[in-house]
Image (cartoon, rainbow over all chains, first blue to last red; front, side):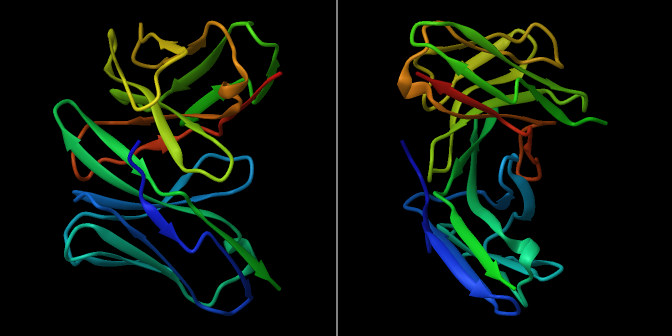
Length: 113
Length: 114
């Protein structure tokens, strides 16, 4: 099945460092979403991007919708221990009656105090 | 609002057993989805529903069945459990289709088939 290529697979950083992760696809998406998943929980939406070239911030998080509509990146500035978790990108394509999310493979982030 | 709720949180099945994973949402969302998440992987769509009485297959529907008799509930049924169905199952819901729509996820059900 179709999946997005997400990198890096994992990151181990010190508190205070900035983090960058990205997703690429061979398909065009109408919307890009970034989710965070804490252990034992479902994914929680962090940022949604709706237009090519869009740059959106949510606190210390910044994400961009690539011009080609085939990629997106997420930056986290000044990381803190509670940023630990798995981050997933998801591309939303819709046609017909529903919207289907295609998920990336995830980036595991570990932050050392 | 409780959002999207799932039961049970954990379950261990023997090969060939059956079970139903429950999902409910109280946000009056039309659309509901079932995903599975295998270790180290993203979520894959099993089935989805665009409204009561309407369901359709996602990317990995084999071995599963769903029903949508009410707007609130969307149970997922495993008839003959197999080890390949060991996974974490997430239910999600959204209000409508469209570029501004957002899917909200439940906390997941961790299923092990031995």
